[in-house]
Image (cartoon, rainbow, N blue to C red; front, side, top):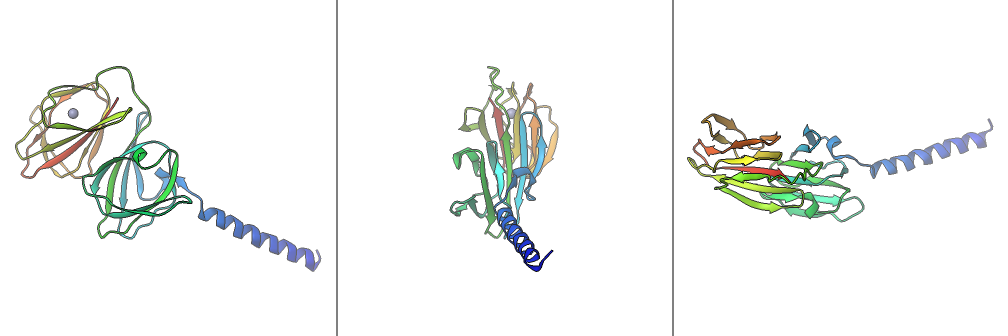
Length: 228
Ligand SMILES: [Zn+2]
């Protein structure tokens, strides 16, 4: 091999690797592969992400393919930047509820950063399907349950209970996911008391009747997202 060919080979491999690293810089991962977007639960209906960004954290670019309800456990100041778009800052309050489809279309690639002084902790409930079997999702006594958001695929209820306060006894005929936004003691309709932490969540298949009673000393908030 003469020197010219060697030089040309060397030169083209440098150009190729520079080109590849430039491509890589604009690359992205599925949301559940972003290190701080932990896939905490998944089945045929739901994908639940436990998102916890420490102060100063900048996420990888990641792709959202399905709509998520973000239940904010600890809010702070954050930014989001769509791939190729402008960086926007937002003050997300503890307790905020938001569907990702209210912010952007799908699929969507972006990265987010925490510029606050506390961790940014969010539970993201992703809806993989629409059940749509014409059943009534919720029936019974819904006292102390406020319908706060309604979408074609989901309804969101906020349950805010002072110590000693309880909801009515209600039936769920369709799946739902509940998220505790505050720590405390919760008693069910059989009087079983459970200690819960802020950010605890559970997927429920439906077909049950229950109520919540605040059995602790501080007020608590519970979010139920019902499939439709
Ligand atoms: Zn319920």
